[in-house]
Image (cartoon, rainbow, N blue to C red; front, side, top):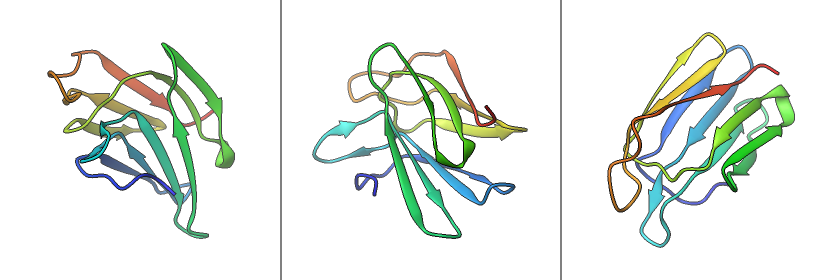
Length: 107
């Protein structure tokens, strides 16, 4: 189960029946760099935290993520084919980097 949050983004992967929740913040910890995945058929959550400069993980449901560690809220995401594009946002203290992050969902 993910942390309670707001100002996150959600992308629905129709072909896999998954909802991918990216970033967000809450009033206790501020912004965070968490990815939570909900299997919409079974209602099972899988939560992934990003650590260090680079995080690589093969998750259940064959979701593959190559992700840099960053705290992010108020950001934008878009799904293009098998990729989730993450851009912009805020990290509690300043505007987030202008880098574009790509989350590949096919191993």
